[in-house]
Amino acid sequence: MRVYVVDNGGQWTHREWRVLKYLGVDTKVVPNTTPFDQLDVDALVLSGGSPSVAAEGDRMGRNGEYLDRAEFPILAICAGFQYMVAHYGGSVGPAAKPEFGRTVLHVDEPNDLFRGLPREFVVWESHNDEVKHLPDSFELLAHSDDCPVEAVKIKDRPVYGLQFHPEVENTEHGNEIFKNFLRVVEDWKR
Amino acid sequence: MFDAEAFVNEKVEEIKGAIDGKAIIACSGGVDSTVAAALVSRAIGDRLLTIYVNNGFMRKGETEAVEAMFKRVGMNYRLIDASDEFFDAMKGVIDPEKKRKVIGERFIRVFERVAREYGAKYLVQGTIAPDWIESGDGVRDTIKSHHNVGGLPKDMDLILVEPLRDLYKDEVRKVARYLGVEVAERQPFPGPALAVRVIGEVNRESVAIVREACAIVEEEMEKAAAAGKMTLPWQYFAVLLPCQTVGVQGDVRAYGRTIAVRAVESVDGMSASYSKVPHEVLERISVRITNEMKSDVNRVVYDITNKPPATIEYE
Image (cartoon, rainbow over all chains, first blue to last red; front, side):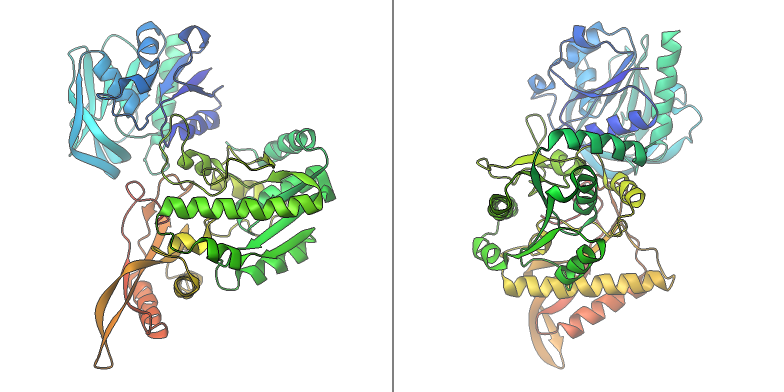
């Protein structure tokens, strides 16, 4: 299985690569300016990064192209996730209460990504912005006390977004979330 | 999972191809640079010269301990005392990024001199993933310029070899254990050393204060861990803060400095939670620092911040 990590300049982009590598996936980190046609993959992870996606969308390179053209599964994290929601008509802005470090995640929809996991567990965060409005084409999967939109799925596609960081050591069940995503990729390939 | 043996075999072959002639390695005696030294010496043998630079900012007894280790291992090494040069360069430097760049450049100037004498054109460094990630690049924000990446001068004339670039600390330790490197379990210590644990100007006096405080923190936590009172944190140290506060010592007013004690749990240094060190141990540290260092320090605080939003070190 080949899953590349699109580098949006995150501190933990390389961690996403490490987690995928440890799970036995054929993976590498690619610049977010890589043309879609050069990506011969089964899935993509869109990493986080420092851009404030509302104001600095140009720093997000070809993320929009990947989202529009991919038929395969995508896991978008932090800035990648915010960009995706904004790209499909949602809104993103400064968080009422930014979250850094430890937060408790409340799972609302325990399917797909959260299969087999507790309904509440500790996750690690690092975001100044948050999703303010989620379009109808998205389903809400999880929230935290201070952030209403922590995990989403595009209803009719195997495309997911996470505000928190499953690739970070301090996040509980982070590996399982990646494994669940890889299961989605396997199912899609069949 | 990470396979240390496969990694070593792959890198040794790669290094053999990359280095023709001689190389020097910048080695602080910490886990990363010592593993890099062991790895490269497997590949090129005695064409590698190990350089330890005493920048004046090392911990108590560190230079002596590192030299003893080099001798035990039978390394081809040179110890260079460049402390005057480093202290001179740090005069009046307050900004943390400036500090790291000044230190990065000083290191390179020393290495260039040694490389010229030794006839080497390659500089091996124990750079690991967090060093280049946090140093920033075209797409990544600069969190801090690690001296061995973001602190390198643009005009340096050595070719870099960095075999550990894609590894994190836990993986480097696995390689260290596989290679039988004796410092495998040493706690991480920053390249700029105590200079980034003095907030404000780095001089012989401020470094001496933080050096003593660091020694007390290490000693007490290691003692408590050996006695089963706590598990040893991933990293544990003292920082000298740039403020003075009022105290009372023997009915006399004191106006001394403040030491912050920092201890964190981490795996890879890219995220960390503060250690829940028993109050009894913290109190012992506080009493020792304020008594033994009474003319300099009259207040000790414990840092309870995770990474993010803080980083592990202060600068």
